[in-house]
Length: 317
Ligand SMILES: Nc1nc2c(ncn2[C@@H]2O[C@H](COP(=O)(O)OP(=O)(O)OP(=O)(O)O)[C@@H](O)[C@H]2O)c(=O)[nH]1
Ligand SMILES: [Mg+2]
Ligand SMILES: [Zn+2]
Image (tube, rainbow, N blue to C red; front, side):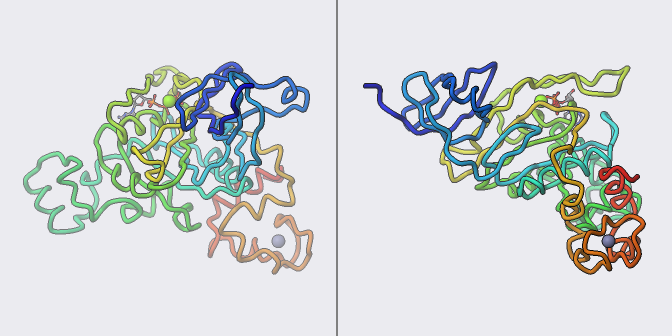
């Protein structure tokens, strides 16, 4: 009899799953019964295998459909200001999908400009660097104008900081923000999600030198990535499982939230939550209804851009 082993699917390509077990990596195929029941094994699944056969998938803690991955602690929704151009609607859809799956999200601005370039000086170290007029590097980074503190009123990310999301500004090439990212990822299973070309694989390479994931150019004509990463794969962040994991995923340019019932959408905008239940009508969709507490909070606790996005997502915008 073939021994049964427990493991985690760390990669799946064309029906072939790589399962990490205590006794090493095993390449497996799913039993036909999964196909018949329309169950697709996912990267992140805890499974039981026998030889080359994936026998059983244990109940999932959670699952994300795009990118398809399960048992996640944190989604790092990765975006850029340029190349590809920032897309608030797409970010809102990613965040709603994560929330619907019950997974906390962190926003990462990838290819972030040098935090020492422009803007008012924010500290002695910063001043000293500016007066020495040297480009900053990861080590001499002043640490004061880092992360959310660098958000200005014009910033695309202001609505998200207001909503309560943590935004990490990072650059795989410049090196800044990587320590922030590392700290936010420690001990968790983190999945990088976002459009093609934003630098997901580049960030993972920068976080784990030596990994050597393939990265691709941005199409000059379309200003979009070229879908370089083709499959989802989990990588350990350190030698022990306790260090955490990160998952690289293929980028995409659109995400549909068709699986989310319209009445549940408002509850997926985290800054709306405090107002839900205060509307005059219990089935309020927070559009043109009278006595709507959500609408009353637009411009106060709710940023108009996020509200507009919500309306679009329920087909009213
Ligand atoms: N200027 C700049 N370019 C970067 C930075 N990080 C990544 N890039 C470039 O952005 C392009 C896309 O990077 P990838 O890491 O392949 O992007 P991705 O998000 O993994 O893309 P897909 O695999 O297609 O989803 C490459 O040409 C990278 O060199 C950065 O910090 N600054
Ligand atoms: Mg990639
Ligand atoms: Zn309402």
